[in-house]
Image (cartoon, rainbow, N blue to C red; front, side):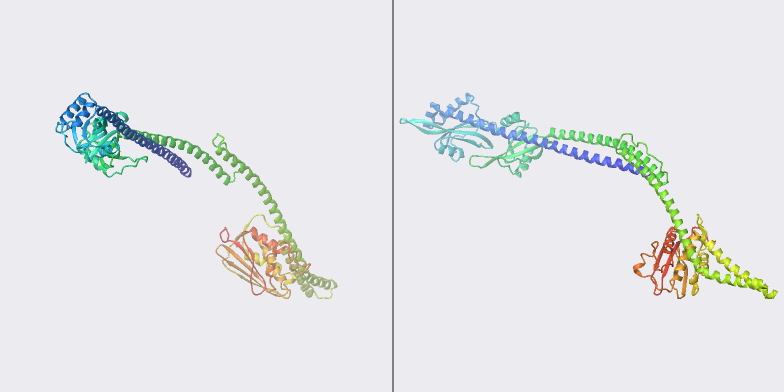
Length: 615
């Protein structure tokens, strides 16, 4: 199960990383693609705007040349001088027949009154209006021409018509000097033909709007209807035109169901009066289709890449998972103590997994060597500890033997006296029988002491066995009571009746009791009471040995368990008793410590609860 979780995590992480990288890369690509599309549209619209400017300049140049050509005709000058409108009209008709390619030809007198004009037919009525006698002296271009002698620009030349015009004065010799007697105006309409020329040159559409009507458009009439013109005028009326030499911001608009990018601009006359709205438009249907195709390709690329990523993730995860499974199995065998296990090449590719397998083998070899060293050290430590315990026991036996020598001496003296009296035959047979009885009793007493010493001095068994620690305490008390230090000592016992059998080394626990009891007795040379308590706790058995001696100073409590440390006079004790006791209790998994008590010393040791049933 854990292996499958690792497998799924590796696949999931691979998929997430691949998806994140892919989505980020493709998003950047799509962003750049859209930006390039937008830049292309913007460049085409900029080209359309530049084409409009160039074609306006070209028309103005043509208008200026045409106006100069007509104004140089002597017949026209003579007709203007007489202000004969019919004669002027006939002369203009002659120029019109010459196909000068001008949409508007006007002759004006010096007072700004039209003498004659040639203009296109009205697109609605199909007729040509007569402009003779109409004033144009307020016309901004006419005013500028009067002031400067020549001018050109864009203005409203006809009702709902915008022209590119040039004004040139007409001169006539009067009294030997030339005098300006009128003006020629040549104009070219900004109409559908002009718009189509812009489209042919740049691919961008040109639209001219005035009062929500379309004055000129490069779009087919069926697409650029009155309703479309009205909607476009509403759309561009709220858009502020970008200033010259600045970055133009495009807007979006749909005309006849097709998407367009548009850029509006105001068209002004020489007096800076807004006369129309110019719109450069670019049909973006091809861009939209290209975006859709790019998006489809991106989706396909994402799906394909995800499939590849999942496949690679599954392959990599399977390889890693199998290698980890081998490593996990080897680790489990090591935890079971099989330190000879070795990892084969996990992947066979010489990669990090194989390096991990090699490190694992090195660890296994190191563990095996360390285990062998620990086992060897543990065996040596166990032997040394057993020897130390046995040495301490022998030392205690020597101390006990010295203490009980006088106890054996008294019975031996009595036995010697009784034997002498029997040998001298100075007593009756009944008295001799009594002496023999006393000799037997004293001999049994001596034999019992010797047997206790022999029993205590035997080496401990190598195996733990269930033992009654209360009986071990009683045996230690009985052995210690033969010592001369117990001549003025009384022992008070208080053992809980529910203390169970404990798994222990009986001889060693008996030695613990004996060492602690002898220490307590030696701490009271003037006599006193030793209290031994045994209690059952939640997870251990606790024994407490208290005396009424001077106690153990606090500054020495961290030293009393060190080997060969003693506070007794020279010749009394070896300094091994408490050190050996501490090691024995530690060996049994218990704790030995010194408790604070108002009088004397109190040593407490614990033994873990038994692993056998009560017997």
